[in-house]
Each structure stands twice: as structure tokens, then as C-alpha cells.
Length: 79
Image 1: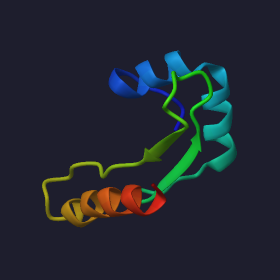
Image 2: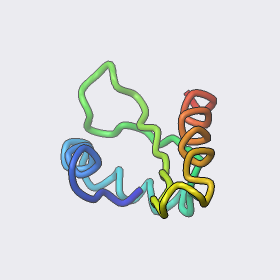
Image 3: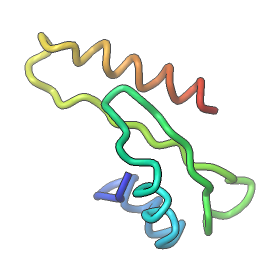
Image 4: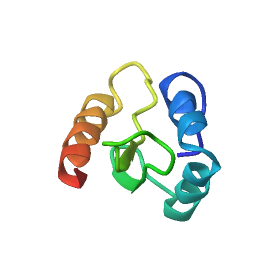
């Protein structure tokens, strides 16, 4: 929720520092869950950003598949 690299970092740079502050306000977000924040400075028609935390891959025998599926389900529910 704090903006790392790749797509996450690009979203945070485009949305401005308000997105990181909003992420801190809704933390923690557990793996498999999803939460929404305003989109701040992202261009319309973007109004919200849905954040999710994917699983850490540990070989596939630790529920990673179910956690990833939960990410998708929760994003759709939040949307």
C-alpha cells in the first residue's frame, strides 16, 4: 500500500503523496484482502485505486493459490 516498484510505484508517482498517506490510513491489508482509496491526482475517469496484497511464493504448498484467488475476489467485491 506504500508504493514500491513497477506498476505500484508508477501509480503512486502519478497519484501523488496523498495516495501513500491514504495507504497508511487503511493499513494493514492482509494477504488476500483488498481495500480502496481515492485516486487523488490520477486522471479522470479514475476515481479509486484498489489495493491488494498477493501471496509470497513459498513453493506452492502453503496456500499461495488460494490467497491469490482471494485477491481477485476481494478486488471485485471492493469494486
